[in-house]
Image (tube, rainbow, N blue to C red; front, side, top):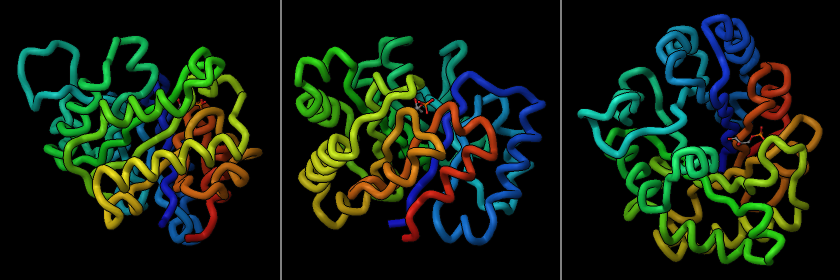
Length: 251
Ligand SMILES: O=C[C@H](O)COP(=O)(O)O
């Protein structure tokens, strides 16, 4: 399976960030293109400009969230259809910062994943346990609950990516051991196969996210059932982001 290296810029970036994005597109050379798919999810304000800059380079674009409805009276929100219109091919749903900042529940995340499919976007559906849940030995149970509550009713490898992001690893510099990552990704793979059948579930990409950096990317990306990375802070600079992409194993 070709790895997906996805950058989530979160609430970072202005028009001046186009220069950094250009370094990413120019650095995504034939070797990297053969090695992995590269996705940048900037703030929605930059999608249109980045679409112009990305043209023909192979770098894909995504949104960071979408509303469940295609349009309507929802001040400040953006629909999956609007993201697609602005150049997105992917959209992150259920990121832990959306869950905590905006109280998004599993049913809402599921509805957003289904909205993404309706609009022709690939949903990057995020799940992960908190530090307290991990300390309480509930990691695997939390992952199962989140999957049961938020996976869309129908999915294919072309419409769904799952991202495992332990909340305590996000932006903290901490990462789980490779054995812990392997255990959770193995569980997720099994649940995807149960839900969608082996022909689909075995081919849905499962990303790891949380403090991925050039120094730990090769180790994390080599873990079985880790099919790429969802990168926050290190995706803001081309040098780090491309170094992570270069650490992806050849498919
Ligand atoms: O969506 C990305 C994740 O929240 C990871 O962020 P981070 O790489 O800054 O830890």
